[in-house]
Image (cartoon, rainbow, N blue to C red; front, side, top):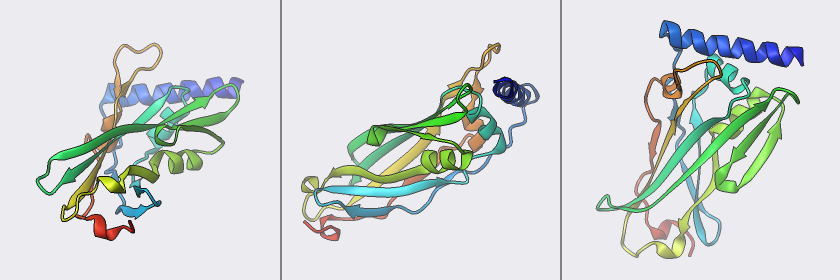
Length: 189
C-alpha cells in the first residue's frame, strides 16, 4: 500500500511540475489509416491513435484519477453535410489499492481490467470494429466520408486549484482522420 501512495505522490509531483514550469513533453498524435469493412448489416471502421502517449501521461494514468480519451465520429455525404455523428470514449482508472487498471470502452459497453501500461495503451488507442452505420442508409450513387476526431479534457488533481490541460500532451492538436470517399458498391449488400 505504501508503494501505491508513493506512486500517487510521484505522479502528482510530475503533473504539478509540468504545470508550474510550463514544460510539457508533447507528442504529435495521429490516426493510422482506417480500414472500412462490413459485418453484414453495418459499416465498421478500425483504426488506432499512433504516437499518443508520453511518459508523463503514463504517470497520470497511474495517479488513480480517471483519464478519458474522447472520440467524435461523423459521416459526411458528397456535399460535406454531416448525416450522422456519434461520440464515444475510452477511459482508464488505476486502482491504487489493488494495483491494476480498469479501461472502459464506451462504444462496446465493456470494462476490462489489465495489469500493464502497454495493455492500457493498446486499449485506449484502438478503435476496433466500431459500427458506424447501417449499410441500408447508404444511398445509391452517393459518396461518403467518415471523419474521426479525438481529444482529451482538463482534469484536476487533489490539492491543486488549476486544471491540467491534457491536450498539452498532444501539442494542443486534435488528431483527425478522414477516410477516402466510398460508396455502397464497396460493401456486399
